[in-house]
Image 1 (cartoon, rainbow, N blue to C red):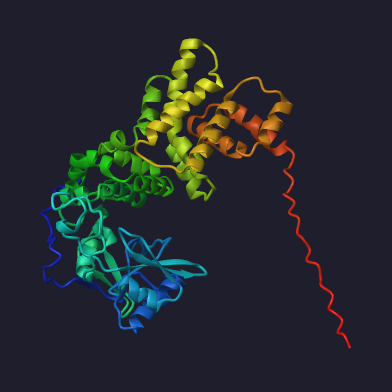
Image 2 (image 1 turned 90 degrees about the vertical axis):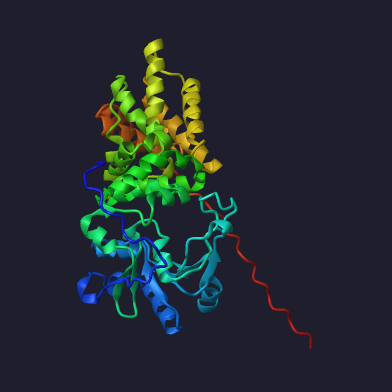
Length: 440
């Protein structure tokens, strides 16, 4: 994909330059207040009536401009966190690195942040030489806030005062052209926050856009910096990518720009397994995308197990080719733990999620075992993690086309298993006290 477009001259990227933004009037864009959540509209008007600037921002504006319905509606303002807490009784201030307010309504949470500017190097914990942003509570102007965002298409503001869209960075042009473009110098921006490289691939895959050539070149040059990113943030972004419904396209961008070999070598196993005769796992991500589009419930443990499974299966294939028999459970668990430990060098999981993931993988391996008796199948189908393991098995069958009869046998056991009794909760009855008789 690199080189699909000729490199364009760099745009003006100075947030301090006194240039008027492009203002798209209400008749010239598709955003309507009817499409904005009730809570976000209330927040915008309360800020406006209190004398503050209040803009809807980020992905909500981008998606509405593209005719999509956003999941979240974020707001940015010149009111500082302490002002927001005073203005909204239903708000709570969260975050240390990035302090903002969550305004809580019955139908959801509206995230409200104060306009930011890029912190000076002296304000960072690492000192002037360290470009990795560790503190982001330097408040600024709307223009400065737009220029500190990651991509042009995410830096548009919707102004409820006159229903216009405000564009400081050329985001409306890139929306029309279908381009993912970093705001400012890509080399500098990726050094500030390496996770932006992963987000660029996610947006390109999710929206069907092309990554602008300068941005592509910077990703290839700084891909190793992903190792510096915080593991919890990488984990959060990975789950968002897997649940965006276009994970296959996003991973293809990661493959072409060299991010997979740094961040997700497990996905490379999908290719290596087919080359070495262990099966074609390339259909796993398209299967997940189809399930997400169908709004099927897929637990986090099943998502991660589907990503890790090709590498585990490749190693299991090698062991079974050498021994000529089905892999015993202790050997399989050893393979699974080794793969998970390698994964957790780059990502982070809570202990209970790690335990759940291992139970899903263990159950999957049991489903693959031959020679089950009907009564044994029914007992195993009653296990608490059976459904998740069966879902992982179904993903593999849908991806490879193999094992369908075995899947149908287990699905039949799932239908025939005895229903689990609902837990009985004993409610203690309160004894009514008899009124004391009054002494005469």
